[in-house]
Amino acid sequence: MRDWWSNSPAIERAQVLKAALIGAGLSLAQFYTLLTGLGSRIAADDGDPVSQSWQVAWGGHALLHHPLAFWQANQFWPAKDSLAFSDALVGYAPFGLFGSGVDAALARYNLLFLFAFALAFFAVWLLACELGAPNWAAMVGGAAFAYSPWRLEQAGHLHVISSGGIALALFLLLRGYRRNDWRLIAGGWVAAAWQQSIGFTLGLQLDYLLLVLGLIGLIAWVKAGRPRPPAASIKATAVGVGFFLLSTWLLTRPYLRVLNVDNRTSYSLQSLYAFSPRLRSFLSPPEYGMLFSRTPQQLTSAVGRGYAEKVLYPGLIAALLAITGLWWKGIPRALRVGLGLTTVLFAVLSLGVHQTGVGHYLPYRFVFEYLPGWDGIRTPGRLHTLTTLALALLAAAGAARVGELIRQRKGSSFATAGVVVLGLLVLADGSGIPFPNPAIRKAPADVTSVATPLIQTPLAPS
Image (cartoon, rainbow, N blue to C red; front, side, top):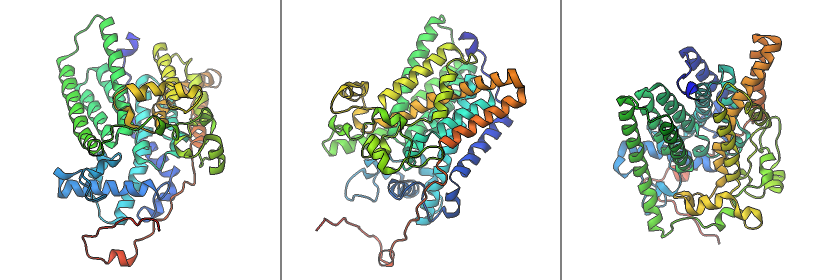
């Protein structure tokens, strides 16, 4: 393990550029139906994506016109801090500075949607390379994460699919500490802060992940005899952690104010039951899939109502590769075991809590009741983000193992071709081509012609 730590692999600029272009190309290919209607259609569905396109637009408007009242959005007036009623996508607010109007809001959202998938692929490729996976095998890992079938079912939640910052932060921090590069260390903490600014659905997961990894690193440092790191690394860590904590504090303030005003401190345990997946959720493909798919009726029958939060199918090809990766010796055994245990742990936590039976005592109940912050999360299935991340890294190792076996028998050219085929199979398993992109109706003239300011109030059912 010490030898592995002291030998951070070289990653050439040409490889980085190629991986970035492939990531962008895959995103465009997977969701090509968006390209002809960036300003008139929206990715996935016309529910949450529409409101999230407004969130990004509001973020840009607030930054430009009243940054000190950023959270006082023009919704649910006269409620205070109304932008904090859900994950606010603050990290995407600067994109809202470009363009104005409905068409621009839709185009902006769709471009961010494409960016989220491209970044997820690219960041996991970087992390897999840093762990020791060869170039093409690392791309298989990137595909296994970015295009996990589970993410297809979550595609209507930009704050959930925007998980590339987790892998990017881990890559920068790992490479920075291995190389004692203060710039990478600082960049890693900035990336972590940016990821958290997207929303606490993933931000809270990242917080605890960094805490656990930090404790593991501290134990390893003590066992190694407490070697003194370079002063630049210490300063970068202090500044980076300080920036991360400050940004976390600033982001949590409006959410805490909302909770205090509403006299509500958390969700109840009962509120989790409706959103907790079942064991069969791991075997239930999403509604849209190229290799495997199910109808809404089949999904409702298999995992219950609200199936979008209960589908946990990680992809058959990726899972088989991950199992194979447990035996690839290009990554230290301790890391492989750690990734395997992480996959299992978060898979179990993703099951949440159930009202009756053994499911009532699943580990997530302890997390929900005793760990700070988790009583504000009612969708345990979204922890599958970390399940699929660990699984994707193992899948990269599995692809490397398969490539080695082919190389021993057929040579390097066949090995590269074999790994590319594996990547294509992973992509096919997680592809929703053609992915839905419903058209958004324009506001009627009797609304757009009214002089502002305009207050729209809901009508009570008659």
